[in-house]
Image (spheres, rainbow, N blue to C red):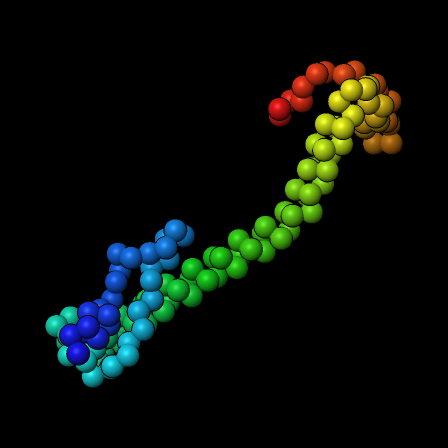
Length: 119
């Protein structure tokens, strides 16, 4: 019985690498309610509801971050492909076009540099 009481205590200070606090599973509600910090059912429900709201907020933030990264992924892949292409073409000059103004493009030859700007 004593081990159940220890396991059921909220562990606010324990968190994973992302800063998300560890959720505690309450096996025996009767034993959990007899703990000193659990004065009444209202106090416990309020504390558990606050913790639930924190988890929902963290979930929402993680979902937004996931969507933002999914949007950025094609751009990152394109940039990576461009860098890989530049590394392959490092031994020769590169013929390219760039835009000066609307509908006005200029052809250019980029000589071999020996190293990339980001290298």
